[in-house]
Length: 169
Ligand code: NI
Image (cartoon, rainbow, N blue to C red; front, side, top):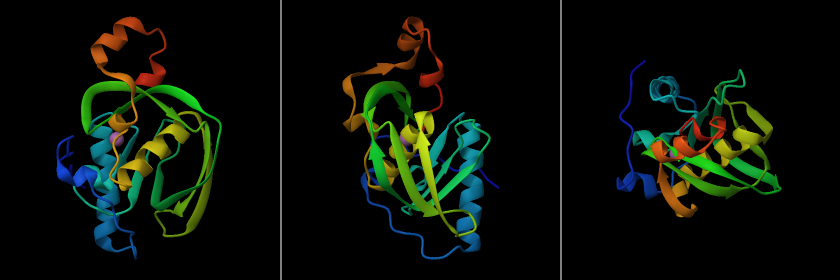
């Protein structure tokens, strides 16, 4: 396993569309391991392959619910409700902004064994899935922020509920 360099806003790779993963090769397996290691190193809750410079449809997520999700070629097939909350991104370090997302989503994908799965998600997991799938389409949450992008330190002075503002994705 190895840490990968996280690309930050302004890097053109973050605005490009990722290609599907066609087969589970040792290289992809290594990338999955590296992405988890890199995400944990930066206290992240999710990471998409373009954030480490690889334009493939691959996402890892750990929102602290006891699961390590690997989503290969993910596609959101259902969504409902609306909820606005703070969001952050490892590619936009130190910042937060409020983003409106679907409250619940169902995503279909392939898992780390390249088996088809479907996950019905809500809460932070649903938010994270939408954020990561956006990365695969070359879209950053900063495009969706309502109001101003804020400095994390400024928000922490103001907000009681810190749960929602930790865990960049
Ligand atoms: Ni992100």
